[in-house]
Amino acid sequence: MKYKLPILALTGMLILAACAPATPIEPTPDVLAVRTSAAYTVVAEFTLTAAAFTPTPLPPTETPTQEPPTETPAPVFATDPTQIALGTPGELCDDLSFDPTTVDVTILDGTAMTPGQEFIKTWKIKNTGACAWGDGYGLIYSYGEKMDGQPVPLGVLVEVGQEVEISVNFKAPTKIGEYTSAWQMTNPKGIPFGKAIFVKIIVK
Image (cartoon, rainbow, N blue to C red):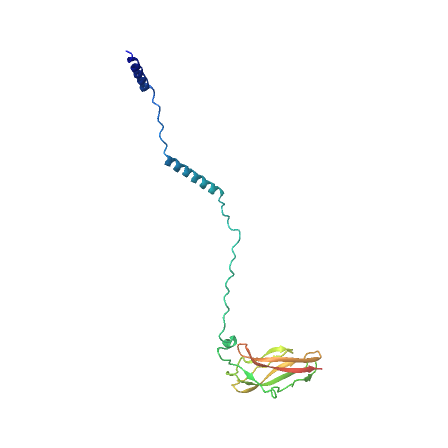
């Protein structure tokens, strides 16, 4: 009988233990998952921080320098424009010469004139060009005192190598002094050629 009590006590304790509510067993946390989650959190925080402090680039304030326009080079003539106008590229068609001892046919240099006196100056020149002188050829004023000069028409055909006398009607200035007037031959296109010829007078 002395053994029945402890057995009964033990049996009761077991029954009580079986009826008591079971203590919930907490699951063992997954260490790898915890570390991975923490790592993602840190990366996200760094990304947000970098975005917050990254400066936005400003638009350029300087106006771009424009390149200067390219200049078109001026055309270079292979021949003299005067020759082109004459219609004989590469060859000067018109020319003249004169003998200094015979060029002055009338009114030698230094001839005395009265104020306002009218006179005719005549020169002798020679056609040394490659073209005959015909209509449209004549003298034009070049420089000096014009003295109301009016050239006399050539009036004849001057062949190459031929001499001709050519004249200008003048009127002496009214003021006392020495005056020089230079003239030059021109072709029908109005282009002068050859050396200038001149008259020199003294008004007394």
